[in-house]
Length: 579
Image (tube, rainbow, N blue to C red; front, side, top):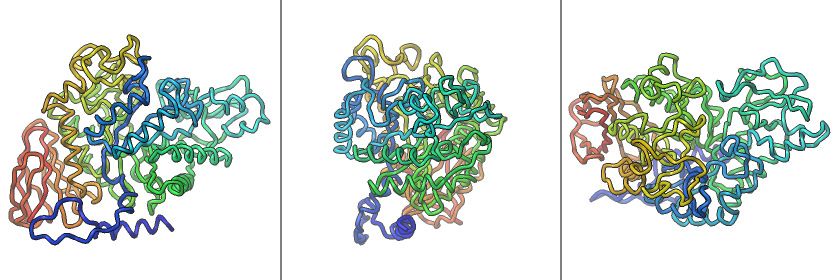
């Protein structure tokens, strides 16, 4: 009932809610409405910043980043325009999978600080108007977790049924791996238990049996614990695997999903904190997205738009926008209380698995031509700046990120154009320490040995690429990101409206129109390295003035609602329409 009420109210608010911008001269201000409901939908707009505490900032000279170090850099994040921090796993872990193999869901890795350090970080962030979200990784545990250690000891252990077992090796024991090419199976024999246990990920990460009511109760207990500690929501890891119905006889290539679990998790989370959200990691086909959001918004409030991300990289690699336009149209129909989370790079590989073989090969050829740059037979393990190379293309990518339908998400270090270290294992290539300055160890730590190697050589070495140097350069990637973040705040239409693709008559140019509360924004992007001239064609009223918010130039809509647009190679424009 609550979700249905939200859907009805959002329609009213979309028509009535007062803009936060100053009224034009001679314009009668609208009567303000209560803002509590708008506050509950804070995820409609705002920049999310992905942080791995371990490699962000070391405060105690042990070579490992920590919560005190993160707290010290909150002012930097505020200046960047960050409104929400998303924390990678920080709980105790053997670190076989960079912290995603958790051995205690209620603790904090002692290398990263104490519970008091965590509490102070949350408090300081909230004082600056920054929310803090965290990863919820309950699809699996570490094999060192006490639950699994007890489960494997005897068949009558109460924890035995917390995991998924088979007495004989299942027929499809080598199908459905999350990490193909590296991972060899999804069923592994545990000699102590005398049975095979199921793991979608590495064998050090046995899957929890989410069909077990006791496991579901434990997950809710974990959620309540961290909500009471002050987190604003959860990035839910591996959602399709979390909700799959798995047993010794199931087919990993055609799993059954229990979507009611998402609804229950949504309800439980909001019962304890009304504006807390779930941000789902679900790389699914658009035809399958509805049950993840819920047809009335009762599922995930937000999800990463992997489908658009893959076609965006195809457009960046080839200059062709038709498939990106199709991807945007395929993902636009979501509940009014839901939102997409858009990103350029995350902490994993760039997953190109939903592109055709021909499309994927074109992206490989442009951005990851060496096989050492590729991973899992589907992706690229490089950071954005070294892939794109051209500063104009990087600026275009960020212009797109901040103006796509949804909220923008940036991975730490991407805002300064950090490089990658291909010599590191798998996804660790894009998980090197943050580069703060040209001081020893990039200002990350004063100790000689750091938790992970710092990039020292080449054009992306820390002496060249760091926060201090980028702050001093008005044309730097950092300052461009800050400008886009500020501009996005001035354009709430992007977060609240449903973007509409405008016909440009060009395969290289994408244009999107946002209409909300009598305000309109049109964003235009040229994915070609050559200048492009085209005619925007839509139902835009003739005679309206279009002001380019990027360079303050103006133009007027011509006859039949058409507008001639000229864009430099890899150029973009954000137009505000006014009478």
